[in-house]
Amino acid sequence: MNPFAGVDYFNTEKLLSSEEILVRDTVRAFTEDKVIPIIERCNREGTFPDELVAPMARLGLFGPTLPEKYGCAGMNNVCYGLMMQELERGDSSIRSFASVQSSLVMYPIYTYGSEEQRMQWLPQLASGKAIGCFGLTEPDHGSDPGGMVTTATKKGNAYILNGAKMWITNGTIADVAIVWAKLDGEVHGFLVEKGRKGFTAPEMKGKHSLRASVTSELIFQDCEIPESNVLPNVKGLRGPLGCLTQARYGISWGAVGAAMACYCAALEYAKTRIQFDKPIASFQMVQEKLVWMLNEITKAQLLCMQLGRLKDAGEHTPNQVSLAKRNNVDIARDCARLAREILGANGILDEYPVMRHMANMESVYTYEGTHDIHTLILGADITGIQAFS
Image (cartoon, rainbow, N blue to C red; front, side, top):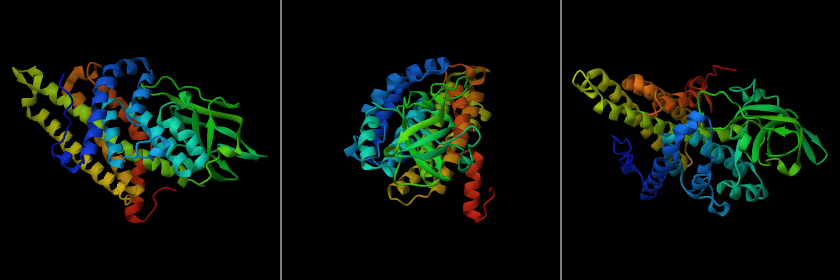
């Protein structure tokens, strides 16, 4: 098998530094050598490939933009985006694992935590010796996180957590959970370690999407945690929403990887599948689908590149991240659908990655802000009128 060459119709590689190219190619080779050979089996069995955690850590895939003093790589945001792109070309579940570890666990500890909390957790998380999860979404509160009913009550030098979280990536296997709860009506972040009395994290089964990812509930029944486990440097929804902006940025790049995987599978198939005595790539309707895919992938790449540069300059906005997440996941979802059409009946077989990516994109389209919520975020930004309460 030839190594994956990527999709780069506008020669965007010219916009990358030598370090960024090296990072991309290293993670691309990792995905080719370690993820793709096992991912269909993991998807079929509904199991997370935990054997990948240690080599991912050695490549610096966890918290790669954080400082080296915490065991991280200190890279820029374009490097991080390229990492997510290549991981999601393998599978959304693998990118989700890295996204949660980096953007939703390590980022809030670094940004909102104390130095003691950083030194305790960040080196462990960067090395893969500890796994984290992020508890915001609840059974009855997804797009409306401000309505959360999970509470924290002060009790001497401790806090008592009660409530439940749902759709939590890594929850069952996590050593620490970043949990958002209301204390006296105001949202605070708490570090909850695995094994604390009153804390359970049952795995959710029966998924048709993200099957190689661990998805869990987090349940708190009079779970007592010490005062030292509160994230001291943030209050209110800006805490969890700031984390989501980080994660959505990575998703924007990751979706391009999934779209590339589907496009390349469809292109190769179309050139070799013979019907009516010629390859189906010679037919106008097939070419139109392939061109649409290439067109949208190219636009998504340029969006990511500019967003990454803005982020590295400290000039990006959450609304720009919303636009990139909204657009790129949407086109990846459609690329998967069109690729399946080109592959015909063969498109449903796990001999090809298309149906797996299609199912995964249904989750990615919904999580970290649904497509509709991002539409309303952008609508409010450009009109100055809030369309939802």
